[in-house]
Structures are given as C-alpha cells and as structure tokens.
Length: 229
Image (cartoon, rainbow, N blue to C red; front, side, top):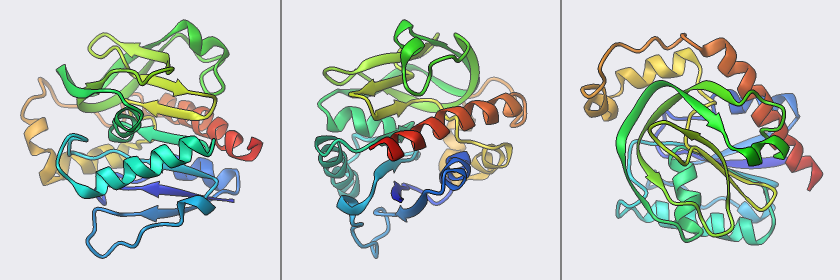
C-alpha cells in the first residue's frame, strides 16, 4: 500500500506521520511539485494523499498549488483518504470551495485546542481529551468547506480541524512535529519574519512527549482508513 505526500519546502516533511506509516506498513512517495524538475505523481494509483505545510499562502499565484488542488478534488471524488496539515488543510479547504484568509492573530508556539462535540465519535479524534496543547505555526485560516464537520478550535483560531465525508481531514495545527523539526524551523530563513513577531522564546520540547502520543493516535487511525478502503 502506498500514499503520496506533497511537500512545499524541504524542511516541512512528514515528521511523525512517517513513523505511523511505517508502523502500519504503508509506503510513501514524496511529490515535490514546487521543484521545476518534479514529475507529476501517479495519484490515481495511490491509496491516499497527504499535503504538508509551508511558509507560502494558498492564495499565492503558484502553479504547483493549483495542481495540488486538482489532485485533492480528484481524490475526494474517488473516495480516497486525504490528510492536510496547516497549509495542507488550507489547500483542502480552498480546493473544496472555501475561502482562505489572514487569521486575526498568528499562532506560533504551543497553544491549547478544544475538541468540538462532533469529535466524540469521529474516526480520528474519538476518546481523546477535550483539551490538548499542541504546536502551531500559521498566520492564515479558512472557512469550512460545504458539508465539513468542525472537530477542534483554539482561542485564536476557530477552525483547527475538520472532516469532509468519512476520510478527508484538515488539521491547522502541527501534530507531526518533533523537537528537532521545530528547532530546525527556527533556523530557516523563510521563517525569520514570523519569528520576529513572537513574544517569548519557544521551547521545542515543552509538550513534545504528549504530542508524540497524540500523533501516534491520529495518524495511526488515519492509516486505518487507508486499510478500510
């Protein structure tokens, strides 16, 4: 079984999603369409698609983002599991007809999310605590696509997680990150502008242990959707 993961910059990769895929014997191929030399992936042959984060906006005039939206719409029409994280969640929202726009405040660091009532019987979120502290790095948000179910919110950003149908998920926060990934993001030139806006230093390891447990649950259950299909 194979999935395709769409990256937008080399430093925002699968992180702990890769661990879940390996644990469930799911192979993964990266599709780096932002590279001029990249070839289009055979998405029709994949069991599911994953869309990662990035420092750009989904509203930027970037042809590879428009191509990814086409992949999303086709996969949704085929009933395949689709997972989007941060920028990836915004891509899913936009591809399905929702608006993406600047959030009133940037969320960078560790902030609490609260699960919505619909999460209680959701395939990924069921049985989890109502409140979790997770890692965020985003300045934009989105409206929910038509028919989407809200699964989580935060104080600064109402739409933190949603589901469309039974197997399409958008996560605005970053459950995939490790402390090493966060520390690396701090060093990236593309993130310097965001870092000038934070109020205090961020400890990459602060809630990392619990986030690792949460990622195993969420991404392990998403792998279960692949096998169920």
